[in-house]
Amino acid sequence: MNVFDRYYKKYDDWYDKNKFVYLSELKAIRKVLPKNGKGLEIGVGTGQFAHALGITVGIDPSRNMIKIARERGVDARLGYGECLPFKNSFFDYVVIIIALCFVKNPQKVLKESRRVLKKNGKVIIGIIDKDSFLGKFYQRKKSLFYKQAYFFSINEVVNLLEAAGFNRFSYYQTIFRLPDKIDSIENVRKGFGKGGFVVITGEKR
Image 1 (cartoon, rainbow, N blue to C red):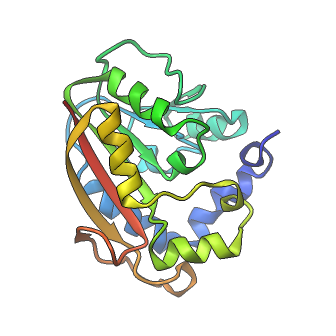
Image 2: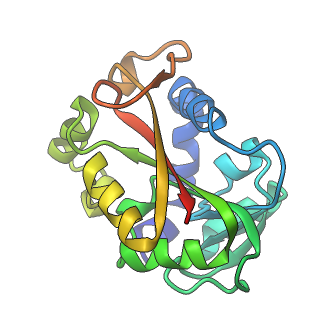
């Protein structure tokens, strides 16, 4: 069993214990999330984001997690981002929140994302910026989940996106304090370089 299957309840509880971090991240994603269309979340986990954002379909390799996602009303499938069980040009947008740092082949995941997107479809990626104060904190801390992660910089993600066939990038950032210091919803600002959580969007070209 991988760490997410074994500690799925601990993972899910994190969102309740860090409510304002979670709500701040949702606020940043909503800045770029299409108001209409069919969406897919890769690495849907327990469905915390998909449920809150109205994303109807998700995929994840953890059986225990997708059970909870299904209870939250998400059509969660067992599988991997490197081999999506969907036909070409099926979705209007694809969302990958934190999960990119855990996949085995991020380039393949992004190429698969492009394949299942319609023309001019949008990919939305949320990461803990490796170069931010928060990225450096988690790299030092080696937490239960993040000790298995590969943290990306913004430039690394953009390079991967360009290689996969995306362009027209935009950036939003939030989380300007350590999670245990956050007691209200954080602001969302354009760009990157200050916030620990950054949302990067690209368009299928």
